[in-house]
Length: 355
Image (cartoon, rainbow, N blue to C red; front, side, top):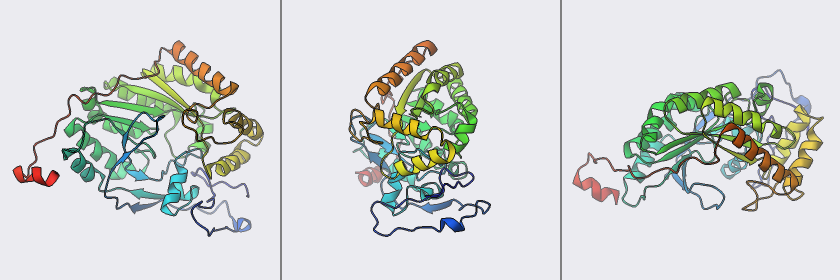
């Protein structure tokens, strides 16, 4: 594969969809780096259900809402890239340029929470792609979902790497006042140059730290997620990230080593060869060292921490960083005590419609 890069994109390539027999092979010789890259396409997602259930034992939530499928942030390492293959797209450039938008998400969420079948429990926004990616600034679907959750006082946990989350500090602060709102800010590196090529359309490290500062000042519990940790490339930054996040107001921290499922392995190898050819072998060998000799190990229990001596060292470095920075590894559990169903303006007949 030719080593090329599109400005503002995590990758210039579209590897083969594992579910498709046909494959599009571009003419690399005709590639012109001065030509503008493909523009982002926003497409309507006609989903009829909005709350996704999770039964993985190593993920700390059972219900999630994902307003968008695909993510324009373009993070080259994103574990969610292969999910785009279920839509008939590639996990490469398609993932960051073909974004499916769930315009009906707020209405669908309201319907599900209003139903007596809904048992109050925390909802994660988002468990897969970032709910505050660039399209959210214009569309505001995540904010509308938060308005519904605030109305019902249903607990929510946000995961993002975009400063735009501070726009919704009012709603998140209201939920936090009931013990029903937390935010997780992902900080992968403090090196802005590295961040620009690894996460091209996400907020800069400084803006993410500023988001922690704004949210914590609004009374919202904030956890910094040092994730993913790239062995041999960003692992040494864990103490500095923890210290900077604590200074900004974070009270808890978490970390997850890099995961490379399916076509992500090829994309990440090519990215390393393009941007860090001198470190490529070291990084890949370190990944294999914590993944049982492979670039990916899907086993529950080890996939979120890795195994072997380097995984142990990573865990010890994280624990030391948290201890020195005064961060805990957990936030207080979210509470459902304040949950209530608002009056249905349709009256008594509305009760039967919700059943």
